[in-house]
Length: 357
Image 1 (cartoon, rainbow, N blue to C red):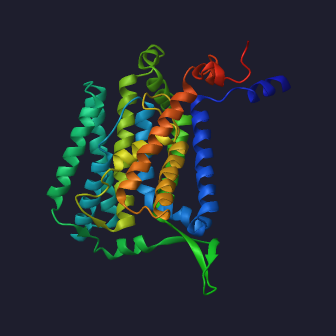
Image 2: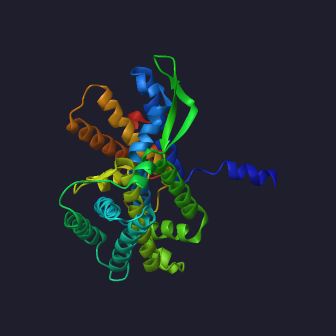
Image 3: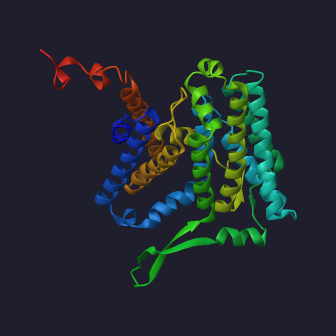
């Protein structure tokens, strides 16, 4: 019995666990470096909560994309669906609708896109990039049809909901005047973290989650093992659509306004967050906890760039692109020939440690 426990402890990390560990270590290394070099806001817990407050919707969207990417697919419609949900819900509430019916509307829009994408991609076997690209254009076009003009929430109940914050006094800081400023977290962050936990449970503890990994690793092998690949792929896009609808509602809770450019680039940021978090575009490897840390890493990079005095928007794009390339290269280096000689095969002879004569 004791020997079995020792053998379990010595089992090597899976690819997913390895990439998750690397992502978490890089995030903490970057954040601690920012604390040591720039200090200021990085020394306060509120900085972390602000990162979560500003990116709660992105975390939710990235969770949906992680599920799709683990299954070997892609969904670039999520930003457009989020924008459509925001505009539709604002117009609905400004014309007498309630918060409850607006939430149902958000879920309904996300569900419709998930159903259509899932059916066309899974059962008609149309390329996911083409279908979700069409979905993105359709959602953006529908957003302008709902309202050409920017909209702002006029619903008093929803305005109160937006102002509601969860205060954590013991993580606050003392202001210059000596008064305590508690750390504040928006309700949307709680929703985002709950979704991360739910998706994590689905992927790790349910048969459906195991089917996602099997399908992304090798769909033919999964089919031979009895996995209903078409139905599993359909569920992945359905989950992504529903989470896009929830993300739109959370985004609206954060901004309180809507326009045709809402969530512009959200799909690219979500893909970047998932990749930085250790999800492979080829499928079969990924973790939503890694996606959460991938989002935080991406946000930390942008905060560091801004703190450094490079406030022009293109510097953030450059650093994001560079970091994305770095993580893709890192994933390739770490996973290439893993278990067949490790990283030594990727290095020239003169760089190898402990080489044989």
